[in-house]
Length: 288
Image (cartoon, rainbow, N blue to C red; front, top):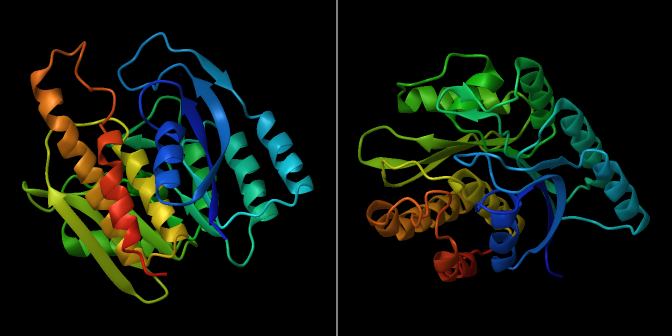
């Protein structure tokens, strides 16, 4: 049977992030993708102003209750942006309701970037997110989120040994594996490092560093990593697929980003659509 995953995060109607990248990418990997939207925004919040926002917290338990009555089962649960402590608590209950011995849970603990919180988040939210990470099989923080989860200063300078130490501390929260994104040991390479606490093995994949920041790439990475894991890829292989595909989308976007005027340039998201063929090819190499 086809594998099935549910992703729980917001829908930004324009802007190529969250559910609007998770659904097409996971589907392209041959995994049935269901969605529970936590909120609906007219655009994402990175660079747009005047966007609309509708909170859907109250709908999540009702969706879960209906699904439970249908006896739906999921091979994977993947969470992205959660907007409040209440949503985290509801999602934690969802894990308890729908987790089976074969369900893999991936948590992207979205809270901030570049050493700062995203708007609206506080340390109380961090404490709640830390509890959710305990229930995950794999967590996918960036360095800002690592610092928040571990209660350490934001690591602007770090060594490979530092990254390995942070990964060990992350799995000590309760998850069996952790992946840190946005790792850069030098000026030329950029990628991610993973740790499997059960095997005590570290894995890493890097591609050429691109200095321009791009919206939505973290969501692309986490979506592809989740899809690969649900398809049966090892952590090492899933990491490689996620890093390489994310880098492919960045490289596909660069020419227009660098040459077109802002009103026409893809500053709000990357050209993942033109790279889906590569994702299908990467996925075909998975041997479960």
